[in-house]
Length: 632
Image 1: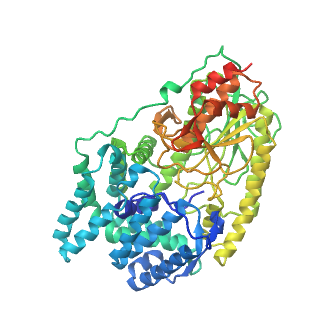
Image 2: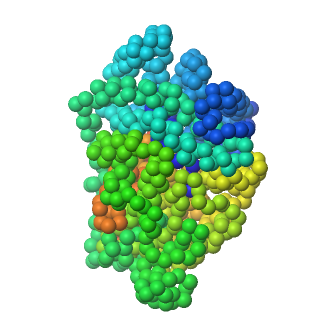
Image 3: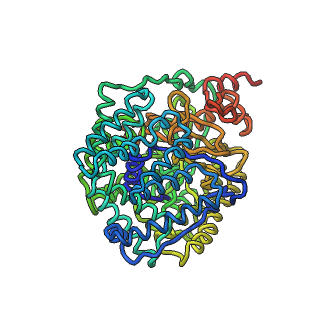
């Protein structure tokens, strides 16, 4: 399940780096506005289009008409609705700022800076919000159309704004932005639109949803402003960063870790509900089905072939076999793809490594079909590696862990291969119920679920496949499709009270409840949702949150194994959740009689409150283990 493609997200992020700076909006509005408490309650808009997306971007008159219509609707939405989600509000303000830039309305563009700055919850990132835009406006006024003078003034203004700031606090953000800006080019933007947006627009029968229209405006801004100005910003950033190695952060996690030995307790079965596990990497930590052998047959007549260490489902949610996804579609060398995958993680973490530089250079060399192929291969290798990496975290320091996989097959294509239907959702619901029943029978006590999707992604996929005559029709169908799987999954979790389910919150800096994520947003006494903090215990800049998210764990550059045995450092709530699963499994191994509620109590008993948020805790494994050992 995905929204904008990887490359469109990079381009839009680069635009934000140029003019906005990252922001996490959170504002309150007048009481007489219509409250919007979930993504499904947001107003929907669609716009007529009689050409391709690339054709629209090339036609100034048609593009301006579309942009003006979206601006009018966006301002009307903000006037009418009290939107209670920071990420959604950021999207509105960022779009309106981009449109003002394209219209040359500098005063309006600047007016959004204090709004975005006030909405930014990360104090370090707040320091640089809007600086590039302010430098652009100042240079524009001073240069009177002289490009050489514009470039000189722009760099002077930007450097003057950045120099007084504490470099140890802004370094990570500057490095990330610098690398994002280093990727983009006019050719990259045009290729991304032609290969990935044009085919989607062609499916939409002459009308595009507001999300696509807004993306096109951001792509236009990238072409007009980010491409020519990115080298100027990179030059300034390089100058500011010269000689800096960044702040040395205190690692609070290593002293908190606890390693068990085989004499400490009894084996505990951990379910890794993910994209598959390379079982060869865990020879002494596997759950084994006593009634099955790897012979291509269903020896125990349970409907699964070769379910020696777990079960699998294909993209159509039908029973499959094998612990790992097929990577047959990949044509590129796997070692290089893994390097690129790590480069992307380094970039997110604000680390300028050889791998991140390699990724930047490679993306700049791509165009057309080769760009799409690379993104799809990178997505597939990410899926292929993900479950094994998670399994390594969940079982670390625990020889009593017995891993069992439940392999899902997620789409990796830029344009969805499958169209969501009521029937496919019912199959997914049935397979989820079957998976949980299987785990109950196998004696699983902890299940890690580092995946998510929301109703909005179903609606977006329906639009991309040309389903529905109107946005409202798509929305209604998406509700029905989504509800089938959501309700079945929640009921199945509730049916397994002896199992603790651990879900990752998400990496979108948003409210997971507003976005209706599952499984993270489900409500069950035996499910906990986990956000990510960094090595110091501060919320990671990417982590989603919400009322469902009560626990946090380290999700910053976590080293674990990927298929084949390579060790990689990856970041995300996908890496934070299995640390909670790891802790839960250790508590159960030490005291198997613990109920699920007692396991959660033990995790909570050892936790430390987040800064300014005592209701949310980041885990302390050592203290939780002390707690369980003290129980009679």
